[in-house]
Image (cartoon, rainbow, N blue to C red; front, side, top):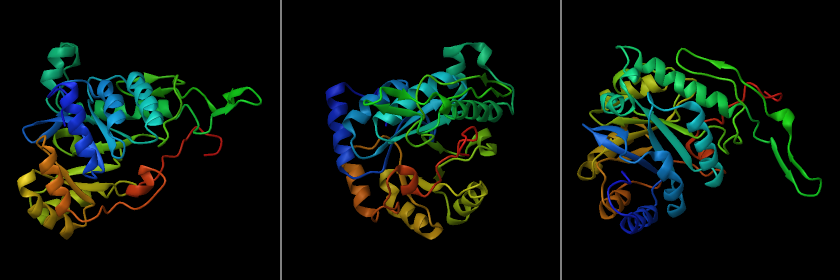
Length: 295
């Protein structure tokens, strides 16, 4: 869904209607030639407002992965995840880089083969900043007056080919450890070495989808697999999803509430399990903090 398409009253009504259909995830992004891309309005700006309307689903911000800064993204998503009680996700993409090179400046243009390197470095630096805090660093004890256990906050000294950061972040660790990382393995991102939590795959054929799932499952843990579908092809996509053991379907093309409700009626009850957070619900582990004394 692209929040730039419509005014606030219409968007509020649409978001409430979408949430009422029982969806699990809402991506704040656009579609460029069939591939997920950042929306017209920056996702980190719209996510807090959207999460105030959407009360059940997790909300995923699609970001320009080659043009965003780790500190700004880490700080914003930390606050968003904590305030939404762990209902946030992010999806750095390399889609339509020329558009963002024009907006940010020619110095952002990269030679062939470097997009995935910078994409992975951006994610690594952002996650390192989240690791600068332990999950229990905030004490918030009114009786003793203790707000923070400073021994559980530290510098991380991350050094990568494109980004370096010392930390610590001036925001607490997200409730999920890291917000859910979404990925669509297209273009150079196919070669990303950073494990994703949720992977979006085009539903072309059973054989092709199985091959893509096998590649995604080669990571340290198997991500949740969602097959992309337009509203008119949900039944066919669902058949492929059931044949390959995918977790569900991701509707593309900015469908209206009626189309989402119709698709939701065709899809069986969510394959996601009960759990106390979205990580346990989709079956991916909580990230360990390599800097924590308890690690």
